[in-house]
Length: 137
Length: 381
Image 1 (tube, rainbow over the protein chains, first blue to last red):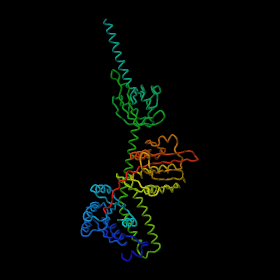
Image 2: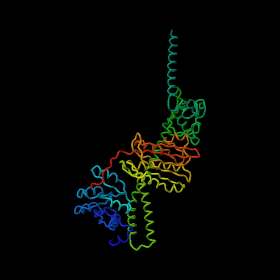
Image 3: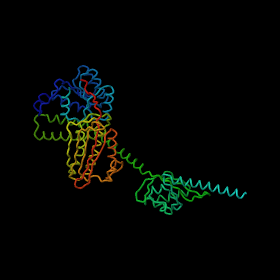
Image 4: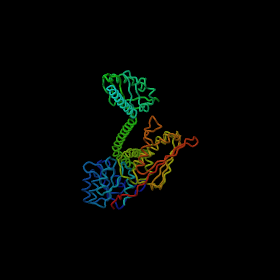
């Protein structure tokens, strides 16, 4: 992908210079992989994970700056994954991503435990997602 | 002496049985249910006050007449069956059926029929007690309809959920495809169009999901977005009817409330405006912040059309459940639900309407109070 991004994109994309290292977690590999390609094309360093466990293990070695995670996943759901990553990496920005039922209920549970996570609706156009990510403080 | 005693006893017994008879008559007359008796040929022999009220016929009009007067033609076959049971000494308990009032109106009733015997035990007729259950039936029907709607809604939500992931994947791949170098003019154009159509599908999927997502927490949201969401749903309909939509929404208007409830309310008001409009008419949606003297800060949203307007008689019944002017398709529940949703949260609904041909139309205004600000902080950093 290197060399493609700069001469193809119509406008320069603003990325968050300080927050470059991104984990994308989604059990649907098409989504995780395509998102990673899009993010890398914009100057981020993105990595795809197809389940929460793998992402948590990696985070223990090195904290990502941003986590973009699906919520409804088999084995470990996105909310629990986020909570566990945050335990080890309190500074990581976490954005949850979902188009599925049951999400509000999970978020309520998280809220009870003291966690408030931003939730983006699927499907989200890459332009919008990039804008949201570059706006993270 | 004995003769006098006998006379006194005879008179006393007669008084007592007369008193008893008067008491029973009073009970029958004061009953809320229709109590009617007929002979074994189905000819009416008594008709109480409630029967006059429920069926619309006075006692003089019914006594001596066949009971079939109040039975709808297609149910006349019921009567011989009822009489047969009565002759056999059987009761019929709480049999739900339909009867016809004097004015032709059909009503649902629950009927109990019992045989009437003379002192020697011979069956001489039947006593019928009828309770008007029309209102109850309508409530059941509405519940059934709303359950059907709810299950259609759940189905739609399920479909919406299922397509969200594939939509996300396709959107991403088209985006990536567009970024490839050396695309022909045509290919770039096709991909752009595909991208646009996908955005439309995504929007529709989010709306369908949005109506049935269970969110009990009020959230802070942009009013313009919710209004646009609902307008987008009716886009085709507006075009088909040639309706012009004018948006007068105050910029940066946010509310702290339940967006799904607002969507439902707006959907109801806009549907009504569309139904009231003539082809080529205009619908105005306006929204602004307002400080209400009693309810505090909030948002006022107005949906106005230049259709025929609401008639004087209809104005009084507008928010009554089951009242509708669209007998083929109307449930008569939209405004009633809207008013209920609003008032439960301290809001209100008002309307102005005119059917003066020179300036006919209707404007429905709702006031949605904003809950006190209590926004959760979302990022730890």
